[in-house]
Image (cartoon, rainbow, N blue to C red; front, side, top):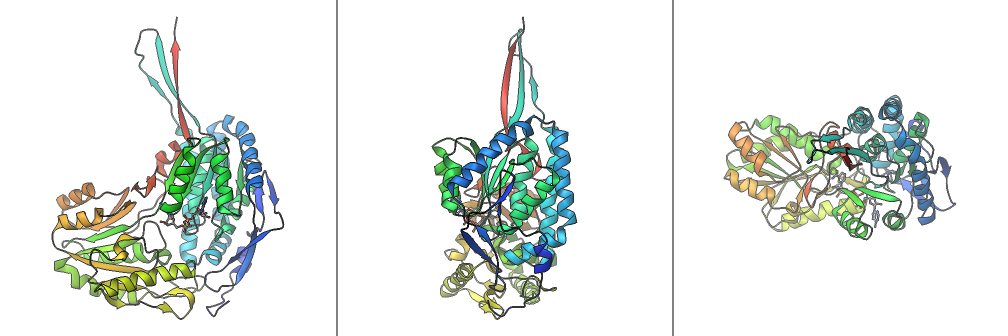
Length: 489
Ligand code: NAD
């Protein structure tokens, strides 16, 4: 444990913390444990069971069994339970947020925001379940009547990352339950307690025993059971592109359905007619939220030459006001990174860029609070060919590139294997449409740095993934189409 602030949020978080897995409606462990720490202090905050294939198999069987009754219930009956989960999450928001900050590190205000966002998926998909409309298609022959039904895909195996320990789960769980599916979840071993707390709340809200299970332990073993078990009909993954690729290969042998929410490398373009103050505000929100550990974080900034120096100056003033600290301390803007590997990656990007001619305007070093803290950093004179423009940094580092022509900015924005989120600031309506249509990205923020909401489709193009979460499209990911062709005498 090191010397960051020791603000005690443990009491509240402990109200909802559970140190066992939830399988077939029971809280279980096997005597083997993995410790979980607080990234701000290094203190061990608890332990979770290290389970493997047999327990995962049991969870899948329980889910398949429970799904039979669940899928047969009318959508409005399922909706009542989903809405109850949302209400319980809202009521326990303080405790859930404290737990989330303790295991993940983000500032408490952001953790509260994430809990509200996470709960919103249960509200939305509870309602949306009632609108999983089929179709009546005009027959192609006089004696034929054609219909399309939507039915649940089956048991879903979900794997989630550490950066949003609540919302990345509920964005999958809510539509799966709404559609009539069961689920077995493997959360990140770095942030399992929020997942287990959500399992407790789902149980309390009346989700049938066995329908939703949480298994922690060896990722590769649990993942292998997910991929090979025939009762699993869909894999829903959020995480890195490297692991997504492995799962896609593994799913090929039994042709499982797949949703992949993978890495990003979001460009943030500021055209010369933009409102500069608004652009700086959006840049700060998009870049430094969650200490830069967001898949839709602005990762690289392209600023038009006529306003470049003014933007650098305003951005530097805003970045210099950000306070680094333990997320549990009021007033903290930038918490710790998840681990020391994450800190090393930020440092590597800075060293590579500085070695190739970029200049450090602010930051550039670790922070005194501890080995996982990094000072918010601004780099200018960044040029194509630097690693920071090609790789997702996942830390509080903003590299600023200068461009002349609009087309150059769009070409540079598209020069990436990723295509999750993009942002730009401009006023001219023709320019706005050209950029919106020209940028290859699943999501575009125009004159805003905040884009996430449960009512809109979230997901990427290129190597950022397959499928969408949230919105009515998020429900379709958990439904199969069944075409009925009826011959009428
Ligand atoms: P990660 O890929 O390392 O891990 C994600 C999950 O996969 C974890 O639960 C991990 O235990 C599990 N995992 C690892 N190896 C596995 C294996 N062989 N089989 C089965 N499961 C395995 O990613 P991370 O570091 O936890 O998260 C950060 C990444 O997630 C970033 O790239 C970020 O952009 C991405 N992300 C994407 C979105 C999105 O919506 N597109 C949202 C959040 C995070």
